[in-house]
Length: 399
Image (cartoon, rainbow, N blue to C red; front, side, top):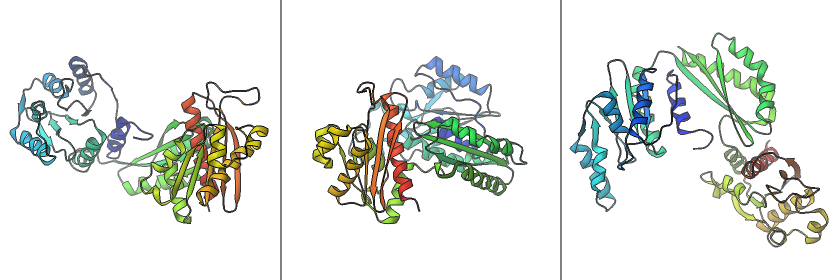
């Protein structure tokens, strides 16, 4: 999952019901460690959600740990065995004997059906508390959680509901975002319906997660809409979406104009094309991407004049512009974009330092080029370069 862990996703879903997460714990596949974590959670919370450890392997120990802590037996349920066998049979295979472990329920637990895997979840009601056991794989966990949030958990949730908004920002560091947003934070905290903000930062991206709780969900939503408008004023064009990934925003802009894009990358080695094609349906606007890592590749694949590289250097604005223009012309598309730089840790020269990156675009209406300097590891430099290139395209396409 991008920009949030599974734990964060679970916490956000629960928060929408007004259920606050007081602790998140990661434990190894060890019976004693899982049991200790469960005891600690039960001492602090009304709801305990455990993810993972429901598979058929020897190290899938969640069921056993929960049964041990509660002092209950594990019972095999034949209807679950039959369902698992039918699932394997539908794929033309036979269920292995070890899969019978997935039919073991903590005594008294209700089954949470798993439409996307073989491990059912379990819902265990205690005197005042609930334990929910969910599978670990996201494609299984998330649908099961959605059913719980809309059903069993919604029925137990407090009256107050929490609304959320996500503001996605690029082109500013976390500290720069904090600086411009501080006056708004102070005002939001003092409102009748207060707004809480969590900031998450990753290379080239800062996300502001806004939350407001109220007995009236429409009132909380209205407060957050007003806050989002206030944030847009101070963040300006650095605010690019309400949680939509930048590559999807760029894709929407390309689609709206009927444009296609081609990419020539050096230091990012295909990461930019990868981000663009992460979006379902991107074949409608992504024509091609080439990795022009060597100078020879820049000449052969992007049509850069070798004399330009010799005179200006591969990491230069003239070469980046030539790469963007060359890939656009060769692909016969409306938008060409290029990245060239020094990701490190080697490759620096007296004139060009590690972290120096040049990005360029060429499109109807003109071209643009930026020289940037990023700090961090090789991965961080490359990730920031990709984000900056996507943002340059976004700005060039924006109405």
